[in-house]
Structures are given as structure tokens and as C-alpha cells.
Image (tube, rainbow, N blue to C red):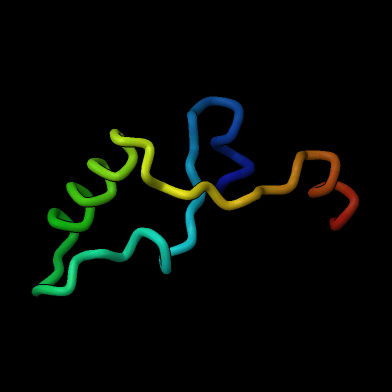
Length: 59
């Protein structure tokens, strides 16, 4: 999915260990608000994604 969208969108790939912060009853709405706030304040540690050349070599 990342490969399809990387040219058209600004995509942030993050490890769930660093963005999982809600310990109460979870649902998609609460999770999306939490992730939006983290991204808005630049608090998401971005995972390294290989370049297109590396993807092609791996294939």
C-alpha cells in the first residue's frame, strides 16, 4: 500500500509501539484522534522506509 501511495500522499509509517497511547476502551474514532494529535505536534517517530530502488532490488 505504501508503494502505491508514496508519490501522491505524505505518508508516515510508524511503529505501533511508539504511537499506542490509549489504555482505555479503544475504538477507531479515539485511535484516529490520538494519531492525528500526535502527527499534528510532530510527535510520531517515523520508521525508515526503503527507497524505490531498494524495493526493486528486493523483488
